[in-house]
Length: 118
Image (tube, rainbow, N blue to C red; front, top):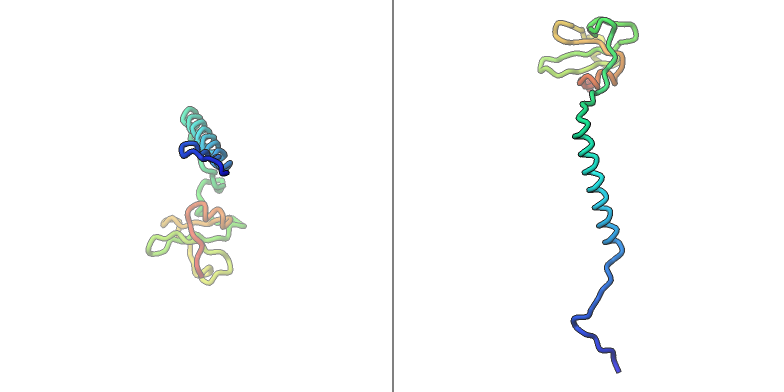
């Protein structure tokens, strides 16, 4: 006739991905614990890369090849102008206000200045 199924004996196999997920979670947590412990044990402060400065240490002087103008507007925003932009020729650099010249857009961006919108 038919099979007798016992109510307490139903056994289902666990999906294969559950064991994989569980082992990955344990592995990730273990690696995180090890790297955190190593970071605390070493306790070195890594400095950000330094932007190359002129030999005098003051970027207010215009060097040849450094044609990007760093300007500070009335509201205190640090904006840089590249040659060919609309207000490049009208922009004047005043080192007393903290304005300066840059040799590359990357250098200006790294120093915290944003590119002019026009």
